[in-house]
Length: 153
Image (tube, rainbow, N blue to C red):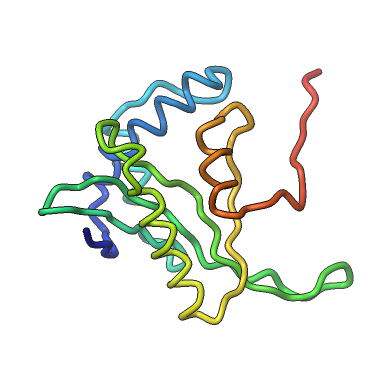
């Protein structure tokens, strides 16, 4: 297996479908139907952001999944000390390759990137009903330090 940085927005848009469809199933009130052309255009725009990094996981030249990460700098202000983090926006693994360690392989690569950058914190969020994501990140030692809640009016 290998992980490389990619700017292939067509491929990432295709690899995004499993995670997007899951989010759509769990939260249809927030997520639109998956439309390839719209996803491709969105990822094309995102890949022009200097802070966004897209990592492609391949084995024998077969794309197995991707991770979208961002290096963030939170500036010092009156309320908070400055810090940097690697923020994980998304990880998506193709359906027939799930639960084979590919997500963990990507996470280890993300940890290595953070260490090389001198960053000591990896942050992420996931949708509350996504029990698979919750279990995966707990397995990786992620703990909640801030909850995001809402109230419908």
